[in-house]
Length: 308
Length: 308
Image (cartoon, rainbow over all chains, first blue to last red; front, top):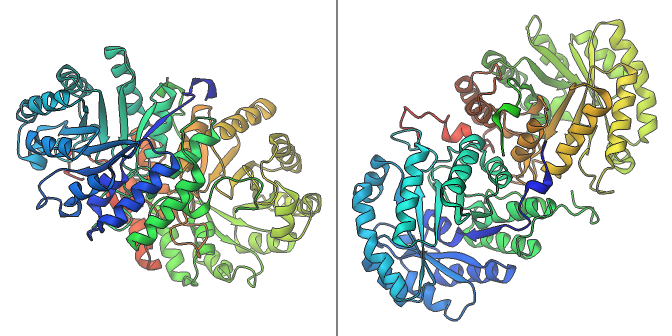
C-alpha cells in the first residue's frame, strides 16, 4: 500500500529550465528575457538554478550569453549553477561568479563519444582539474551522468556502471551526483532499484534525479523514487527542455506540476506555486509557443475557487 | 520500497478515445474516420472500447453519428461500450447493438446539476429503467462517477459518498464502477485510499479508474493505484479528451504511454504497442493537430534500434 509516511517531508527541486530548457529553444532568447525568467524563479522560491552553460558557443549558440547572464545575477542569493565541459570553461564560470559547477559524461561509451567525442575515461581524466579549480575557489561541483536509464545506441545501462561512475565523481570531490534520464527511458522499477543501490553503497542521499518525459512516465518515476527515499529532483519551469525539432516531445518534468503534486501530498518544496505558475505563463509568452506544463494551464488544485 | 511483486500481472485498459476524445474535438470527425480509428484500436488488441454516446445531438454534435458508428461495427468481437444518459437513449443504444452501457452521474450535487440539470438522487432514480432494459437484453452496465477526486464547485469529495454511490450502482445491478477524475485533481494519496476502501467494502476489484492529466499527475496516480491492486484503467489513444479550447490541456492518459510503461514493468495488457503507436499517429493525421501522447512521438523503449 502507498504509505504517505514513507515519503520525504521535504523535497529539493533543482531548477534546470534556464539551462536545459533555453538550450533547446530554436531561437536565441535575449539575455534580458532569460534574466526575467530566472528572477521570477528565484522570487517564487527556487534556491538552486542552472542558469547557464559555459560551453563552445558554436555548439550551443542559444547559451552564448553565459557571462552576461552571470553579470546580471551578481549578488543574488540563490545557488547559480552552470554546466561546464572542461577546465577552461570551468575557470570562466568561476570567474563569472558561479556558485556551483555541473560536469557531465554519459553512462555509455557510444553516447559519450557522440556527445563530446571522448571515451568515458578520457572525460573523467579531464575533470580532475575542474575539481581542483573548484576546490581552490570554494565552488561546489555536481557530477551529472547522461543516459543513466538507457542509451539510444547501447540500450540498458548496467546499474553497476552508474554506481562506479558515481563513485569516481565522489572520489574526485563531487558534492553530489545527477542521474539524467536523457532519453526518457526510465521506468519505476529501474529508478527504484538505482536509488536503493546508491543509498546502500554510499549511505548517502546526495543525488538528484533528472527525468525527461519523452514517454509520459516521468511523474511516475518521481513517485517511485520518493517512495524509496529520494529527496532531490531536477525540474524545469513549464516543462521546457528536450528536442525543439519534435513538436511537443516533452522536456523535463515541469517544476510547477511537481510542486503542485508534492504540496497536495503534504511535501514541502519551499516554492510558492502561484508565483511559479505566473512565471511559467510569462515564460510561455516570452517563448511564443505552448509549453508542456499542465498546471500552468489548469491552475492549482484549489478546492475553493471554482477552478475547473 | 517499490516492490514489482506487488503489481498486478495483467491490467485491463478500457479505451475511451473514440467517445471521450472525439466528443472534445472541435470539428465533427467523419464517421469513416472514427471507424478507422476504432478498427485500428481493435486490431492492436483493445477489447473494450467506448465507441459512442447515445445522447442529445444538440448537446454533443460531435457524436451525432452514434447509430452509424454502431452499424459500422456490427459483428466486431470487442465490447462496444456506449454512454447513455436516460432510458430512451439506452434503448436506442441496445437496439443499435451496444454490448455495454455506461451510465453516469457526478459525485457532487452542484456538478451533477451543472452537467445534467438533476440532483444525484433524481439521476439515480432514472437509472432503474436503464438497468432493467439492459438486463432484459443481456447487456452489461457500468456506473461512472464524474468528479470523483474533486468538484470544481464543491472541492474535495468525501470518499464515503463515492462508496455510497458505488453501492447504489452495484445494488442496481452494475457490472462495475468507473471513478472519473474529470477535473484532473487526483493525486496518489486519495487514489490509493479510495482503492483500498472500495476493496475493503465490496471485496471486489470491479472498478476502473479514469484519470485526466490536467495537472500532470495522471501517470503517478496510475502507479499508486496499481500498487494497491487496481487492475482496470480508462485510457485514450493519443491522450485525447479534455477541453478543446485550451491548447495542450491534456485529456486522458494516453493508451500507448500506459501500454509502454506497463510492458516495461512486465505487466500484460494484451495490446501490441507498435500497432497502437501507428494508430495514434494515423489519428493525429486525421485530427490535424498535435496530440499529447508522448510514446507516439518518441517511439517505444527499444534498446536495440538506436531509437532516441
